[in-house]
Amino acid sequence: MKHPTANDQSGVKGSGYDAARSDRKDDHLNRWPFAQEIYRIAATGPRDWSVRVGVYGEWGSGKTSVLHFVESMARVDDHVVFSFNPWQYQSTEDLWKAFVEGLFSRIEELTKTKSPGSRNRQAKAVAGYVTKPLPTIVSLWKQEAGDVAKGGLGLLRKYLIFSADDLKQLTEILGKRRLIVTIDDLDRTDARFVPEILFALKDIMDVPGMAFICAFDPVVVGKLLGGSHAGFGDGMKFLEKIIDYPRWLPQPTKEQLASLAVADVEKFYNFVPSRDLDETIALLPKNPRAIRKFIRLIALMEHQIQRHHPYEIQWPILLAANVLKIQFPKLSHEILEDTGFWDGVYKVTFMGESEDNDIKTLVAKKITSVISHLEKQ
Image 1: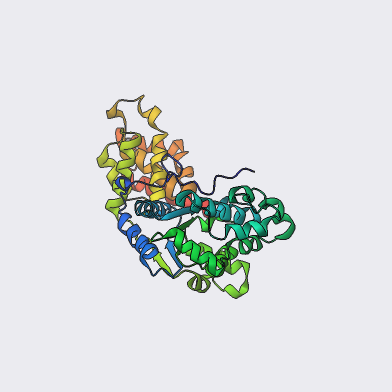
Image 2: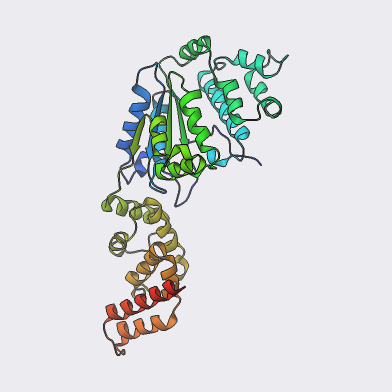
């Protein structure tokens, strides 16, 4: 299985409606000041510190965008930045091999020099290949790892524990620069690897001048930890020992979410009246990914919308139907697929030919009936 390149530094992770933001001009949720705080913690502490910062937030809240902003700030100041995503790996050997290879390659690429301790690691890696450059040696690690480092942490210990001379050389190579590592999607990573990754961050990679910024949902990771070992409890106490600076993403305001929705609408399509859109956004979950999922659903209607005159389209109904799909998937299916119910809505709304001429009462009866049916199931 071929994995994405570990040290991809393009700053563009995916595309489309759900892509994380990399440019400050797209920061409709005002995450930039929060990212500045994270960056200052990582880049301005004492040189003899190693720092672990947690960017905490639920699924879809914009953690990856914050990492992108931090990475862009660090590059402007000429720090060495390495981004890593552990969820894509299927074994600890592959995970740590990719991490070590990517980290050393990044140091060498940006500093135009060999990474600290490379000669020692070459000697330890494969006897007789000391004269070869590190990238060549790296290509030989996989075979060796299968023989002498069956545990992933064994590989990490072997190639990422620096001697006093190594640390001196690392300091000389970096100068005033910091080595900043961003780790994303820990809450999506295989549960078997999570304790090992956190342990490595605290004990093995406690290297002066290095800063680790990890983005994840601590509730999810805490449950993973608790499920892996009874001694971890709910996992939150264990996280407190690992993460030096936990920072929760602020909850986006209604105005910020509306700004995000309008910006996406203007970027991808502009056939929805802004007034109706603003009123509908307030009904959605206060989560950026939910907003973008809603935008995708609206986008699917574009072809049908273009077949009608503007006066034929009841935007409040169309938008509300898609809110139901986001908020209550089962409920929305039962309601939206009931043609008899919609015939009743049509008669009340346009014809006034219903025994019950109150649209709110009609809808309330239908919802009550559906909920009762779903509960029975």
